[in-house]
Image 1 (cartoon, rainbow, N blue to C red):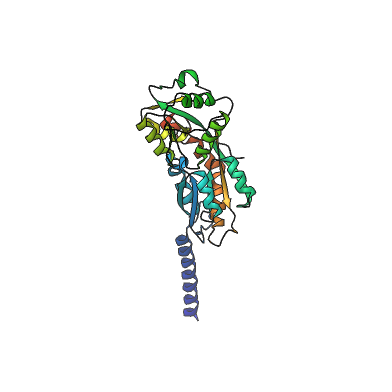
Image 2 (cartoon, rainbow, N blue to C red):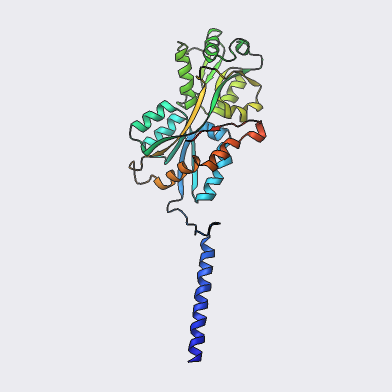
Amino acid sequence: MKKRVIAAAMVMMLGISSAFALTGCGGSDESGDTASAPENPNLRLATTTSTKDSGLLDAILPDFEEKTGYTVEVISVGSGEAMELGEQGEADVLLVHSPAAEKEFVDGGHADADGRLDVMYNDFVVVGPEADPAGIEENAKEDALKAFTTIEQEQQTFVSRADDSGTHKKELEIWEEAGITPKGDWYVEAAAGMGDVITMTDEMKGYTLSDRATWLNVGGETELKIVSEKDPSGVLNNQYGVICVNPEKNENINADGAKAFQEWIVSDETQKLIGEYGQEEYGEALFIPNAK
């Protein structure tokens, strides 16, 4: 009988030890809750080139991946193409900056029930060569319409993204407000991302429209400068939003991962990360968080 009692006690002790071992292998956070890997850990993020070229995603995505267990595939294209990928069900979540087009995307039933949420904003700037042959800095420092009008009148080289991106749409909006249809040898359509367009503009000693974040990250490697900015009319404002793609598109949509990303990027902790990005290196934030 004594031997049976001892054997039973040993079995119980082994069971307890095994339970502790399994808990340790599974991992737990500081609160003691056992962490679990997502059922589908692969998440497709379609986003504008500015969030990548500015370095923002490289700075903040590791936090998301570490906290959630998701691995993010970044598809860096223009906002228009990013939304096309969403419409086709080839992306799970979007981070873009073309508010009017985003509204059309949501109204068209391509988003999930929560629709679009604000994330952050910055602004656009007009950049040009140090010599500024069109005299933009002197005569249109805070007037984007006058800057564009002068460039067209002087037939100075202007390099357009021409890629249906949020920046391209903003550029076309300014030309339209100025009553100008840009065409001619002076107007160069690059069909390229923001970083490449800045480099091309530098090589051609021309002018272009850039989001401020990418400019701060890339512009220092060029001989360009800001010639027009901070237009009080608000025409240069640049708002970003996050949208989860409608999971009814197809069975490949990672709805759980998309929702996790959306909730993460508008959270107080991530908004703080966004607001801090660029402060140390550039002396100013590249993006201003404004999630509600």
